[in-house]
Length: 103
Image 1 (cartoon, rainbow, N blue to C red):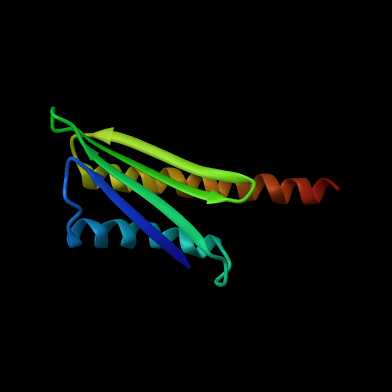
Image 2 (cartoon, rainbow, N blue to C red):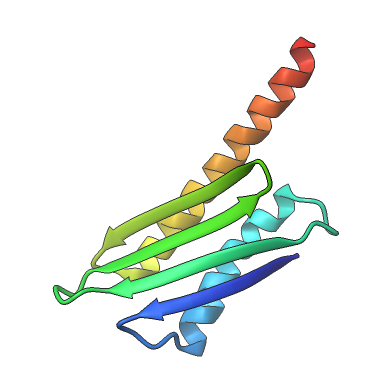
């Protein structure tokens, strides 16, 4: 189960944005055990030039998954950050399974 901490800087985090972030990040729950507690910190920032920065940080004990993206489209950035986090999870799972096989 993932606990979400969604924070906005220079913008109000609306229910629509919150729902979109949660729906996208729910895709990564399949990589973890059901009883495992995760804390996902999401920072959404908007700058004067109308660019949006999305940062996601998920601490996992020995490692920390972190991804960020800056673009004109906040929803597009949320999609890209979710894909980056998912890639990091797969990469770390492959590394750990490779270590187990070589022992």
